Length: 339
Length: 86
Image 1 (tube, rainbow over the protein chains, first blue to last red):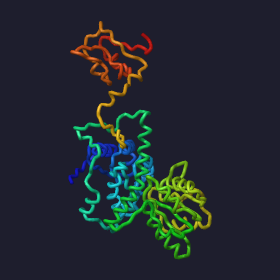
Image 2 (tube, one colour):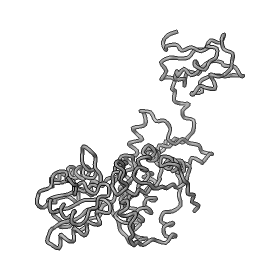
Image 3 (tube, rainbow over the protein chains, first blue to last red):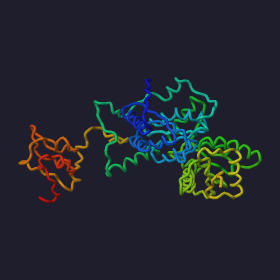
């Protein structure tokens, strides 16, 4: 497999190169974070709407300003509506596993959408953790050869990518993207099941930790879901019936899976490492929608936490569950903010 | 068009008659025209008809009425006329 590494002068250009390469008939991938992702904005939508299976790793970091660089989900959450599939990893092992699965998901005949592989900046990207890589041959076999559907360089069969799209068709193209996202829900599940066979590591759209009989459940994304496991273990040892849900797939959003797992709880806390100013956390909005559609009347509250890399430890997260149990949480809470 | 919205042939813009967007149309006075073909070079919609090196008129199916030909003509041989007027 011949691979060419191309340097670009900016993120807008690097995404443009991925779009060009992918349309031409190559498998294209890149990586970015924070303001770099923001600088790609225009091209993110174009990659998705041209249905190009580009894969991109995003080390989630805060957006400026003030300039910060540390872990925060605001960058990827801002790209939530760009039409990219978004998968979030808890640790390095998951980031590695997700990146292998991403190509299969993006290139699936029923999907053909770009995939954003998210992992927590610094907390995961700059920490040392042990992980198990797979053999190159196993990965190559799993991912398979790239089979471009309509390569632009097939000059004997010329066709048009991304032409001017007037009101007569634009809406239908957006609808097609939505249908591809719907299909992606089942494809992510299928590819994850297949991946378990070569790796022994089983992933689903969500990961539930000690949820079965939990009265109170906290939902989070990324490395915090790892800390949550310790919090749940500690509180369980003290007799609290608590559990944790990790959202692995954020776009498409697994509404039904979320509704099912939250059904009948006494309280639900949604943790967001991003804030939609004037509203609340983006995960909270979707989780409450899922619960509402399911007719769930469990109290659900939002915790904004860890913005700009603010450290959130076991003791901070214990407070979330204790607030839930005591009924002392506001609808939107700002965990650890200094006032 | 495919499910991925790729158009499976080139040159389909030919079928889309952007001339319907026009509110004013260029008209040429061939008595003033010297066939320099500046209009042909600058027209963004390939709407200047040329045969045997001579400017023969304007193809109105795709002319959006932008007026670039009027601006470029060194002899003021092209003028814009309101659509609906003679």
